[in-house]
Image 1 (tube, rainbow, N blue to C red):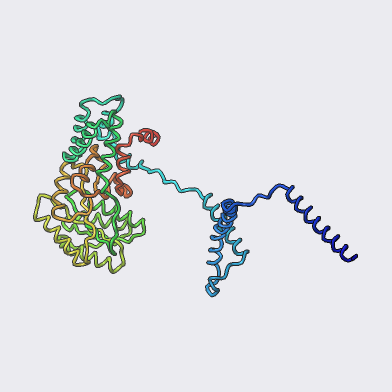
Image 2 (cartoon, rainbow, N blue to C red):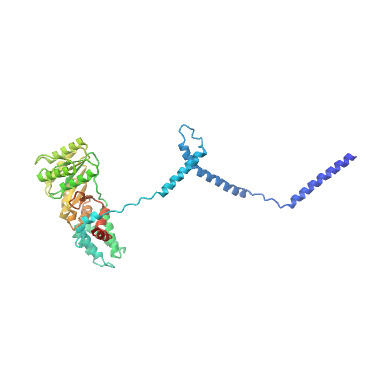
Length: 422
């Protein structure tokens, strides 16, 4: 009986305990259960953080893997210390690159060109007369284009090139794009630069030796140009052989010998009246024998109106090809800038007889008509390669269209000239 009472008391105690616990739980605020979308958003930052850590670690891991010996398996992860070192090295390299100063282009120095073109820049010269048309004017005058035409024609620019320049200016004026003289000036400069784009200086040394044939009329300056060109090439470490192909003029041979002694170049010459083709042939063979880089071949002056003399020039070129296939690699026509419009007639005849690769304009410092450069380059479609601006060896300049237009037509150059002269 007593045992039953004990079991009943124990059951009551257990029931009271569960009843008390349930009431206490109901008295507490209900716990918020996370929704699926919230669970996804909570997982997103963690995943993004893990992905960011993975991305940052990737370059260091790749660098460390590249540093591992080739004999180790590629799947083996690099040790943490190696990853840290690689990351530090990459960071240091990035800082060093950021701190490195950027290379800025050097401004063009056209002072020598300006001095050489002084006559063209004077008040009565090509540039000076054009400048007078634009200075002090606020608006365009109806006869401005006609005045520009007069300056261009009388400065040896040539009829064809003058017409092309004026046609462009008139077309632009008709569109109302040019409203003041300053704009016309800028447009004229831009069009001149466009006409000279095909011209470029410096010889193209396409073979060893590269054979260069100098042609032109009497007195154009072929022999002097060869001497100046040999000086430039020798200063650049090129070995030259000079061919005294002007066998009809003893003074020309002696002049080339003097240049050879001055520059340190070997001169190949024949007897007076010898076949010029044989001299060029021997010079090419000599250059091959001594390992020279360039053969500069002089030729006798040829009157462009004499067909028989022009035929002889073709024979010289063919003889050069027999000595070395592909020769001559360059045929440069030397033209005296002071000849003006006659230079066009000369160049036209030589161009029909020989495959000219370029023109050398000599004595440009001796003329006020610097527009001849525009006429030759645009009217004949032959690139200008060099311009001669004086008697000194370094007065032969590789032609640069940008530098030439800047030196001849640059409006801002007045101050530079004043500072130079002072």
